Amino acid sequence: MAKINKIFSNILRLLAVAATVVAIVFMVTSHDSAQVLNLTFTVKYSYTPAFKFFVIGEAIAGGYTVISILLSFKTLFWRLIVILDMVATVLLASSISAALAIAQVGKKGSTHAGWLPVCGQVPHFCDQVTVALLAGFAAAVIYFVILLCSLYAVL
Picture (tube, rainbow, N blue to C red):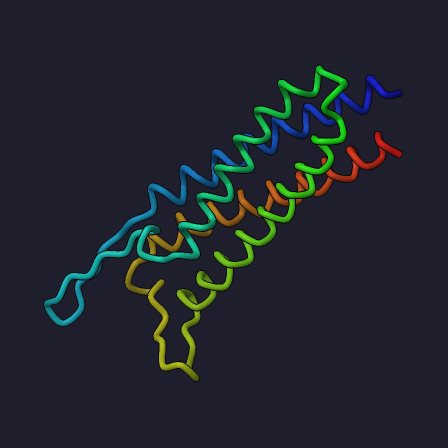
């Protein structure tokens, strides 16, 4: 039973790595420009701190996942892996939350703050960000399942 749990956990970890890589690639390559009143403005993920946090959080979680796959063959590190699985899950949840909040403002705007939606002017950027956020959300859900498997293995 323990061997099946380890195999299932490693398959989930590989899926999580794939999801974080997709999220990073789509977010980092998201850029677009639009012309409004003869002024050209450019949008990039790096212009928003929440999107930078999203990319950094996904990269840390993806890097940790690769290391944890390698360490999963050593039984001495199981306590450390459980703790770091919790950290990775929380990091992914917080980074996706921050990025989703900014994406919502970009898509819908905020009438109270006077911010206009920008997705009508830069649809390619918004499409790229949407795919990145979906992949990031998938990584967070997968990591939650990994955390449950790790806790089950410990208990």
